[in-house]
Structures are given as C-alpha cells and as structure tokens.
Length: 398
Image (cartoon, rainbow, N blue to C red; front, side):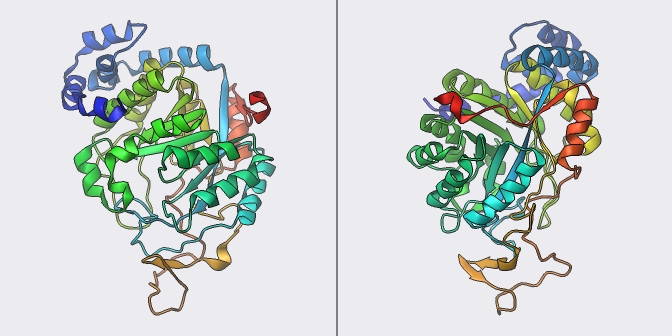
C-alpha cells in the first residue's frame, strides 16, 4: 500500500478541528508523552499550543541538542534551469509566465558549483523546473556525473520521475531527493495546477517512495505554506513523514518549512502562517519527530532564521540564488523566452517585453536572507553552534 491509500483515509478535517478546539489540558497531556500521535501533534499546533510556546521551545531545544548536538548543516541550491511545462499559479517558473529562461550547460553548472565550493559548501541541491526537452534524465545524469568527483553530497529537486529513471541518477552520484507536494489539499491543488504533468496529485505524492526504491539515502518533503490552511498542511505532512519513517526507514528524512515568497506573476498567498506560528510549527515537528532533520531556507528573514537555530533547525541554506547562473552569471548570454516549447529570442515578434525586467534569467522567488554564506557561518558560531559544510563522503559506501 502506498501513502496515497493511507492519505485518502486520513481524517484531516477532523484533526484540524481538534487542533483548533483543544484546550490547555489536552496540550499539556500531549507534551507529557514521550511518543506523540498525530492527534498530539494537532494539539501542539493549535491556539492552545501557542499559549505554551515557551515550554514547547524549551523542550524542542533540549531534544534537538540530544539528538543532533550543536551543529547546523549548510547547503546551497544550484538552479540548473527555469524551463517548465507546468502552469502553476504561484510559481515564477510557470510555463505561461513570459520570463527570461535558460538551461545551463554542464560546463556552466560546473562553473556555478566551483563558485559555491570556493565559499566552503560541500552539500549541493540541484534544482530545475520540469521540462523533459530541456531538463532530460540524461542531462541530469550528465550534470551529476560531472559534479560527483568534487561534491560529496548531491541532492535533487526536479520533476518527479519513475523509479527506473531515478536509478541512473543515484548511480551517477546523487544521494538525496527533495519533493514539495506544494499542497496536500486536493481541491486547492487542482485549482492551482492548471496544466502539465504536475496536475497529477497522486503521482507527485508517491514520488518519495519511488525515490527510495531507486536508492536515495536522503528524502525531503514539505508543503509550500501559503497555499492552503497551514494546520491542514502540517498535519498532512506529519502523517506523510510518519509513513516514510515506517516504510522507507533506510533513508534519512528531512522536513522543510518554506513559506510562499514573491515571484514573477501576480499571485499572493492564499493563507497566512505568521512568524510566531512558524516557530510553533518548528517546535511541534521536533517534538513529534526527534530524529528528523528540519530545513530552513533563505526564504526567511535573517532575524527569524537566527532565532530558530536553537529551537530545532538542523539544516540551512545560505547565500542562495534562485535563478540559473545566479552565482557566476553563467548562461546569461543565451537567455530567452519559451513559447510552446520553442525558444524565442529578444527582438522576435513573439517576445514579450516586461518593463523593468532584468536581463539575467528570472529567479523562482525572492530571497529574504541575502547574507553571504561566511556571514551566516560566523553567526552560527557566535550562537555557540558549529557550521557543518560536509557531513558525508561517497567513500563511506565503499
């Protein structure tokens, strides 16, 4: 049985109501338990849980230090391409957005990667839109193979693939797979994904399982907070995480906490997850999943990121760019627009001019924490933690 069957049977609406109606005694009872149920998790993220946030934060801090020590792993995203065949109302890469697009060559990918390596990074996340013509399985394999000799850890955040298509990527050197479900609310999902293969909710939901079968040793999941009720999303991803911990137990699991950020287009968040509620969610995830890594990206402000380090975060990006070529300018001389799969160059009749639009390739979203990586690393040290640039080497697998 895949998670889809289990997901379809989840009483998510009922659990959200229990979250909203739980009183302080129910929250205290949940906090007293060593092993939390999904109902306990719902209690912790409700309004009454927010009243006990100081206690939750204290326990989350203690538990994180017990399980992970005082370390923060650092990674960098490297965007390969902003081409995409999907129309997603909230995404800057959406197919019909008339943005500047580019797919980096393998040599340009190496150039970007070496710039990140010079900053100290050894954990790399390769990111690309979903477009089989520009971002083929062979292209991904070529990029990974070229990077593998210089990078001990390479993760992927790309369009979902079949298990058999993932296997050559693992063989080439990829060890992690990150998949955002975007939203676990089926109705909202259907409304936001208007065309393209991403419309298939179940296919995307089963992606981590296919990745596990292919041999990825790290799996990462998350909704994109801001598309549907955040408590609904949190309970759903908690159920998903619990399922993966049971069935994909050979792989390490991470949970990300991305909130929707401004991007190309006019889409605005449909729901709100406040800073305080985000802190509450971090603590609840840590208490529910003591051994799961919690990821915080540069979508969040420096002040909030710094404040969350002691409360449960174990993995952070730093100095990030969310456009292809963002670290070195690679590929900028051949940016273009894409119309029905065809490249359209500036000056052509189909080119859409956007006033004030920059000449580099368009980013997926705006970054809130623009501090360079070394500044973030120094801040981590000042807080009494150790920034970890490398935590894995392929030699460990023999």
